[in-house]
Every structure is written in C-alpha cells, then in structure tokens.
Length: 580
Ligand code: ATP
Ligand code: MG
Image 1: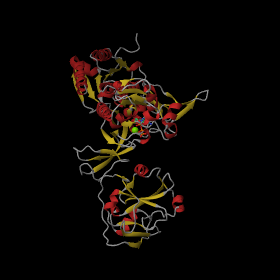
Image 2: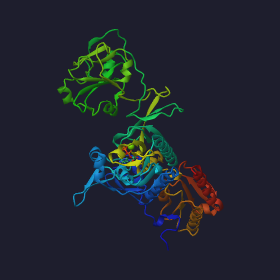
Image 3: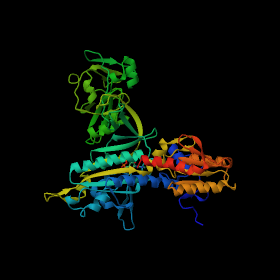
Image 4: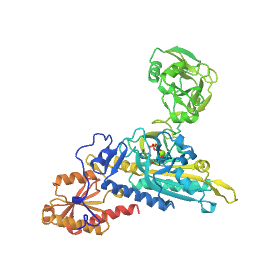
C-alpha cells in the first residue's frame, strides 16, 4: 500500500510536528507561526530546514516566480553555491563586499566564496560565449540558496544567513533594451506580489554595493519590516521611496528677526529644549551633526531641527562620511549640542540641507557652551561650502511630484531590480561584438527576489490569533478534509471519498485522518492555515451534510454531501481563475 494516496496528503502518515507553545527565540509572528505550524525548524542561527509543509509552500512560491519569469522571456538555469574566489577579485568585490561574504579555502589553499549573489558567476559564464549583438538581449535566472554572514540574523526567514533567492541577470547592447527588460521585470515583480497576496509598494531605492543607478525595491508593508519607506498619500501619484533616498519638500517655520544676535541658552543642548526655551517650533531651528570624510576633513552638516540627517545621503554627498564620537568632537574643537556655522574652528567645513536655503534667519549653536545665535543669515554671517539633500523624510512632508503629503511606513524588502550598466562586464572583460564591428561591454541588469523572505512576509501579513491564513495561491494545500471520528464506520470512508473526489478534480487536498480529538484537529487546521476546511462529522452525516469553514473569514456553512466536492471545487477554481 502506498504511504500516501496519490494526490491526497494523508495527515495520519505525514510528518508535521505542530507545537502548542511559541518557540522562545521567535520575536515576530511569522517566525512563531512557521515554527509552531511545522513549516520550519531552526538548524542554527539564521539557517532553517523546511519541513514538508514548508517545502510545499516554498515550491508554490517558486512556481509562481517561474511562471512570471518564463512569461517575460527570462530563461531558467542553475548555478551552484560555490564560486571561485578569483572571480570576486576580478570584480573587486572580494574586498568591497565586506564580512558578509562567506569565504572558504580548500586543502590546496584555493579561495572560494559561498555565493551571496551571482553577478560574477553569470558574467563569467557568458563572457566569450555570448559573442554577438545578434544574440542579444539575453535574460537568465535561477532559484537557489544564497549565503550571507549577516551580523544579526533574526526574525526567522526575514534575515537569514542561508536563504533562497531567485536571481535573474540580463545582457543588452543598448540602454533602451536594458530599460525595456527592466520594465518587464518590474511588472513581473508586481504580479508576483499580487499572486502571493502581498500588500506592497515598489519604491525608489539606493543600489548599495551592487552597483548601478536605477533601482526599485519591492516592499511588503509590515510593522516588523526593517526598511522604512515614504509614500505619497495621494492615490493617483504613486510616489514611494526608501527613506534612505527619498527626496521630499518640507514645510519649515521662519524665525522672525531682522539681525543676528548671540543669546544665552542655559539649557540642555537638544533641539526640543532649544525650541521650548525660545517658544518656537522645532522646524524654526537648525540642527548640526559633525563627521569626518574619507580625505580626513571635518564637516558639520546642518539640517532643519524638525528632521533627522539621512546618513546614506551624507555618505553620497560627502564620500566616506561617518559621524564623530564625543571624543573626536572634542579633539576637533566642536561643542556637542551647540555647533553652528558662525565661528567654527579653522578648517571645519559647512554642509547644509537644501531646504535651509529657504530659511532666511537661522537659529543655531554658537560654538560655545550654552550659547546660540538667533537670526544668523548665510552669505552675511556665515557661508556654506556644500548644499545637498541631507534629509530623512517624515510624516507630513510634501511630495515633490504632486504636492500632497507623504506618509512613512515600514516594509519588508522582498525583491529588488537594478540596472547595473557595465560595472561587471567592464571589470570582468565581458564584451560582445557590436553592429559596427567594435567590442563593447554588455549593459547588464539584475533582478533579485527573496523566495524564503517573501514566504515569511506572506505570513506576516496573513494571520490571526489562531494561526496562519494562507492566501489560496500559496497554501500548502487548498482544502483540508477533516474526519472528526475516524473510528466511526461512516465518517472516515466518507471523508476519504470526498478527499479523493477533490483530488480527482485537480484540487490540492489534505485529509486529517489522524486518531485525534476534534479540538486537536481544529486547532492544527487553523494553525497550519488551510484556506478551506471541509469537516465531516457523525451528526452531520446523519442529515447528509458536511460543514465548510473558510479560514480567512472563519465563516461556516453547511453543504449537502452530494454536491460538497462540486461546491468546494467551484470556490477553488474561481480563485485560480483570478490569476490565470
Ligand atoms: P537587505 O537590505 O534586506 O539586507 P539586500 O538589499 O542586501 O537586502 P539584495 O542583494 O537586493 O538584498 O537581494 C535580493 C533579495 O534577497 C532581497 O530583496 C531579499 O528579499 C533577499 N534577501 C537578501 N538578504 C536576505 C537575508 N539575509 N535573508 C533573507 N532574504 C534576503
Ligand atoms: Mg536589496
């Protein structure tokens, strides 16, 4: 006898050790429920094993991704986990990638990396073999494990050391061709989000160490997300950006003064204390932060008192910028909490946020303990060496595209698409023969999707106090038939027949035929989160009825045994048709 009836998951012989208690180290709901529901087990910090239920969901997500990639002409291949260290030296990322890169050596002392991403490997595969402009464009993807020695793996699958990514790479001979494929990938990413049932926003982002300029992140909105995004409240605008890079307009108050004056401010050196002391709003004051750039210069950066400095923007505007600690400030002659552009120590340079150009008279530190200037005017009282965007956007700032207000939200980055340009093709000498006969480096794009992270993001957005509520497109099976009394002479045969009928109609079905109390079965069914539960009990059968429970709404209805399979199949097919 086969262990499992073909097409039906018989839970009596399935491996799914659900837990009653929350695991102690799980801080967020998706992590808790995926462990309790027997989808995952921790192997070591940041590494997980997928149990059979988890594996089923994973395969579904992969299938959705495959369909969407295939639909835009992106072709699947498979690259391994171990890559030659040499390739990373060629691209320069052996040094640039930092300690997240997992390096290893074999017995002969040859260096390898465990791939955190595959730009180097794919470029080495196509160079010398993809030769002519006539063969372009080409787009390739694979789905495989990735390794990153994250400093703080946490939140289960959200930030892991070993995780599954879909990564695609494309090769082009013109910016138009790259841009066209980038748009196709972007649309595919939006469709993947929809099919996974994710509430998401595509956001403008920073390309980090990967290279290139044009990039979009796909963010699943969630409080536990590590990324912060700004989005326009106007429904027709669509502006959204990572707060690290978001450029917005700000409303600032003007300090009313006709000349500059140094005043005694015997207060703690914070913006709130200063604003309270002067009886003005924080946005009428100016905040200062000091840092050192890679050439060793000391800069003081000024931003409106109502806003924070965006460090990443500071790093872009002032290469290598890092904040000074208290000791370094003292050594540079800077007074924490009282820095200002008037009378800075010699050699200290001044940078300011663009928005402060519109502030006629600044309220700002006087470089002296317990003193501030009010009414300081640039070009008269001080000068600015560099104007740039240094602001971290916040709720209520103004959208540059449409003038509506923006909001801040948190998000889980589930995917990111990049236009890489020629960063890898040039450093790794990947050239093709162009139409005019000259050798040119490929223009490249790369498109990463966190398969395992998106699985957790789905759970983060779809759960209640009883467990997971899988959207139909990503559930471990669409229906669970629950046999309430397996020893009863009718219940089990009827439940088995129903499960078989559903399986024959092409529905994914589990059959809870375990010798367990009804309470255990109901709890497990809700915890695991099968979208539809078909409950077969003795009393119902006496009246020719079974019960259907919809996990999402918790609605229950009675179905006549005769057409229960048809009714349930209809529901499933209606749902499938929405994404066909
Ligand atoms: P993050 O900013 O969250 O560290 P990243 O921008 O470094 O991610 P990418 O290089 O863009 O990540 O990788 C593509 C996708 O891989 C990400 O959008 C994310 O979904 C997934 N991913 C990256 N790092 C991890 C990780 N440590 N654990 C799980 N998934 C990850
Ligand atoms: Mg990213």
